[in-house]
Image (cartoon, rainbow, N blue to C red; front, side):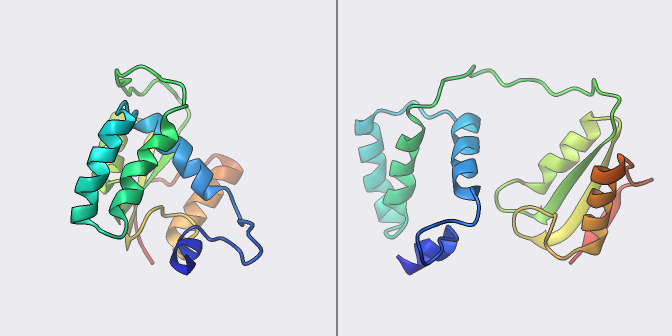
Length: 155
């Protein structure tokens, strides 16, 4: 349980410092709609357990968390650049959750954008110790100004 508490950032008194786990669940449920039945999940859990004995069943049964979320369209929305407001897109080159290629592709679609590339492992780029990333994002949030060109940053 200690490992699970560390992963979820659970405090010794049972509270959490933020709602990151809740937010991740909501995002996952809305991004990936799972229509499997309980019987299908149980079958998948057996397969998962053979491939990943410790976390496999947890990952399989986690799909049931989304069963009561409202269903949305199965059709993906197209992305187009309709805003004149400049935006910043941040991509971490070795992000295990959000592939860097997605940031590059989005940057190509949204004309009035700047891509900040963080050469690093891990998910997210802001607040990880890169002055290059943090100062550009802070300036954007405080003033609306985007960098004059795309940025290549590191930790």
